[in-house]
Length: 345
Ligand SMILES: Cc1cc2nc3c(=O)[nH]c(=O)nc-3n(C[C@H](O)[C@H](O)[C@H](O)COP(=O)(O)OP(=O)(O)OC[C@H]3O[C@@H](n4cnc5c(N)ncnc54)[C@H](O)[C@@H]3O)c2cc1C
Image 1 (cartoon, rainbow, N blue to C red):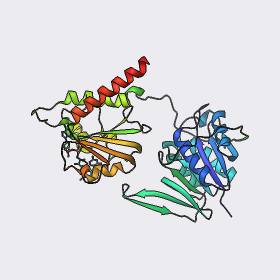
Image 2: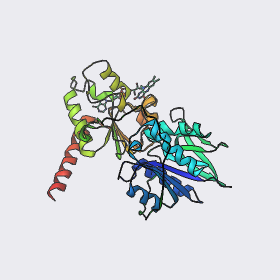
Image 3: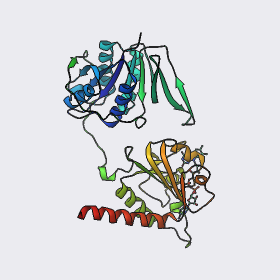
């Protein structure tokens, strides 16, 4: 008999489902041929209507102020209550920080198993086959499991988003047993949006390499120019800013470098493996430990003075053999002109 498929999401009060949830929802909707149940943590009519529009045959919800805060105890209690009410064989959820923290514990409580960082789920004769990458994205594997319920957390950015029309929803509300919590959320501190340079949802990843800090053909370094060119481009193109390890290691050593870069920007084997439609590497050599972090970048371009750099050896779709200072200066000029034309139109 086919497993009951449960799609789980959390939502901010009154908000729509976020992109990670919409991606996991699309994957669930497209794969679960015999229909699916949706479980929602959070109070939002807009979200329940999205779930109904996506074809959920049953919607079970946990609401109330304790469940609005991202906190292990309450997230796990809400998910456990939904799972006990639905008795699913398969649970699919977005691999958000919240679910990645809470759902493996829920799986343990109800005798199931959890796999995180899944990039796809297929159903082979009603049996799920989960795909995920191992060994820093060097190998991918297809997994099957006999144990149920099987919790599958979908890596954000790995699937298209659900984009259908919302529909009227019939919702069952659950009341989980009281949960003891020690964590109180007293506020949220986050950088202003304009200061944020890591933008997982941007179409373009712009990578800065150590070449930006090196002596240029005039025998001088040009750090101020480099900072201005990079930050102007990030702002104008609304791109996400990545870095090579060499560049952020320099800043860790207290050398005069680009102060807005930290190890959080690092792409590669010991850094991040983000997902973007396109990537542009500048002043970065494209060595394997760096380029392996580009596994999920759709189209790769690089600007390097060196015709023999790593990008030239099959790692980039397009390599511009050129001075990145000159190219980015021209690109920024064109972007500014285009923005100006747009503003006056
Ligand atoms: C175990 C291990 C893990 C590692 N993990 C990572 C990782 O996660 N991420 C990572 O990035 N690295 C990693 N590395 C390091 C990696 O091997 C490289 O040393 C590093 O990526 C090099 O950084 P880079 O290309 O910015 O600098 P460089 O190698 O110094 O290259 C600078 C480039 O800039 C170019 N350049 C200079 N001026 C200009 C200009 N005006 N216009 C255009 N081009 C210009 C030069 O031609 C040169 O190719 C790892 C290494 C090891 C051993």
